[in-house]
Image (cartoon, rainbow, N blue to C red; front, side):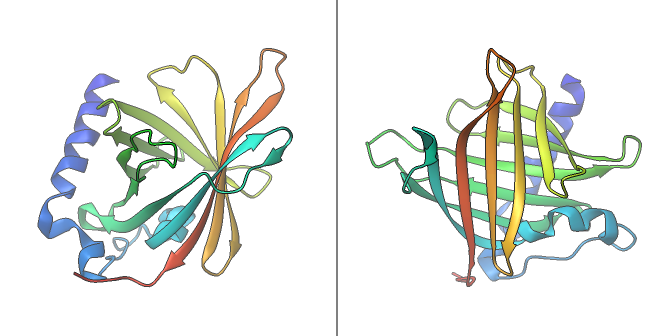
Length: 191
């Protein structure tokens, strides 16, 4: 499993060369021929998004506690969706986090596999995802094993908007909301 992680993280690093940062030119690429249908599950991430971060507090979603950007493009010859997360410092002064996902379709298991690399602690993690019976794209961490089981899903709420909700399983086995990301696609701003 570590070899797969290393290979995917290495691919992500190669994909992030200055020439490959597609969003800087407003060219988000395209899926490779023959894979567009299976890759369509994540295509709502393509483009530049402004994200409001909300926490679950006292049984309701908070007002936004921070804002981030989420930028996605087709990479590795259209065989992967690459998206980056850039969170500025939180309003309380806590340092933010930056990271990149590389998402590829694994035909063998008929699921998406993802590698996440982040700057906060220089860690990497492997996730899998699939569309479940509720119609939402769910994802969960497979390596390294998490201390608490989590589930996250994405819901498309409009032509240019989507949300991501993350839950953690409590000691009683019930799912507890953790945070919610409200994303809105914004116009690409080439440099």
